[in-house]
Image 1 (cartoon, one colour):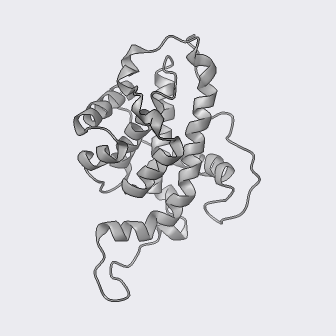
Image 2 (image 1 turned 90 degrees about the horizontal axis):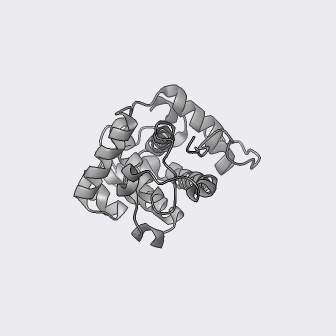
Length: 219
């Protein structure tokens, strides 16, 4: 988490308002993270959209892995990835580091399960589950699964099952190193949002680094 504490938004905030009123946890969270989450959300959704595009050619030729049928749904096709990610940044109350952690865990899941092909049917729930796990690993406190499930548009017992299955297919390897955070912060986000998170320096829009989220064939 230390890799995401270098911007002004990560500084400790006052717990009392100008009028002297004690701020609640949600208000403190919003004051601390909302500006950075607004900057981060488009980067996350763009990464997920690119992942979909890179896996699209494999969806027609790679047999579906039955183990991941539980992550498939038609309902989430009614909401775009942009809107789904924004819903989470607005109401899941997770730090920016948790969103990077979710992308890291999703990439790790693909590395460990090469038959898994990302599609419009599974990307929403795979992302939501990765985010749920990343939040628990990275943040000191999070909302409970019941509230998180409502944000994600599913039932609590379903989220519980998805979380367990995701961890099983990760081999319960949910640890995220500082080096992984640094790689995603420095190589992915600046290209997507056009800013250096450390110095807010404009960068050319060169797109997503090619080494990230490459699709896997059946062989």
